[in-house]
Structure formats: structure tokens, C-alpha cells
Length: 183
Image (cartoon, rainbow, N blue to C red):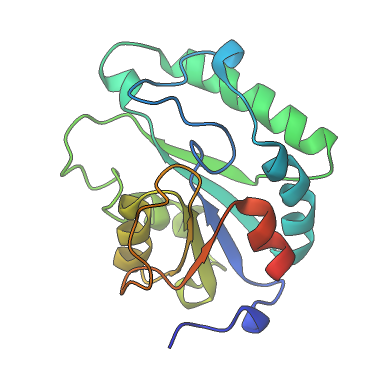
């Protein structure tokens, strides 16, 4: 039996994937600059709600485009600076963004490995993985959550064919807003 959404209290931590959760994921490509970044309207409505529900909100995102030389760390920094500004403008908040540019699928920081969760715990020692939720749109996000000992929420934004119920998915929602409203 999955955790109960009613168990979520403000001291819980929210881990969010980026592409396919906060913004539209580019099919077979990468968001390489701010001009290519498109928020889901539902996410901009959800983030202020989530800011009231969670003490700590972090993004964990694989960013292979850097490793492939398609974009730079500065390009990603510019995307995230603009993204953060817009989220703040609507009353939301992201406390930190962790990203992995590595190409090697076995990199300890590349999802589904839990390295970025451990980075977050190191920076925010009050994070309790048993009181944390990973929200993502891919099974690699769900495996990342499980590998770190987090609860998992799958968003059917890009891969609605993903089987559910599933041992790696506690809850499934259509988008970030339907998840936020469920809390």
C-alpha cells in the first residue's frame, strides 16, 4: 500500500524532474536555450500550491545535452535563472536545482542512480527520504525515487502508456496541477 497523500506535511521534501514535469519535453531533443523552454501552464499554477505544502523543493534533472556538447553549463544556468524568475513571479519556489550532464548511464548522479538525492541531503540535512516524494514523467525518475528511498508520483504528461499500478509508482496523475490539488 502506498503512502497516503494525507500524510504529507510541510516538513516533507519534494523532488521534481524538470522536462516533462515543469516544462514541455522536446521529443528526441534537448531544451538548449531559454527560447526553447516552454512551461506547462498547469505547472505554473501548481508551483505556488506546492510552495505552501513543502519546506524544501528541489529539481533533479538529467542534462545529457551538456555531455554531448549541444549546450554549455552557462546555457543551462541561463535557462534555470529565467525559469526560477518566472516561478518566483507566480508565487512558487525551487530551493535548488541538481543536474547531471554525464553521458554514462552508470554515473552515480545520473537518474535512475540516486546521487542527486544524496547531494540534496548533504546540502539540506533536514531532508528525510522517508518523508520525500519524487515527481517525474519517466520510469527512470520512479527508479531514482525508489533507489533513494523516496515515495513516487508519476505524471502521465509524456508517457501515458506506462503501466500503472506498478511497484515503482505510488500515485499517478495527469499533470503537476492535479497532483498539487490532491494534497
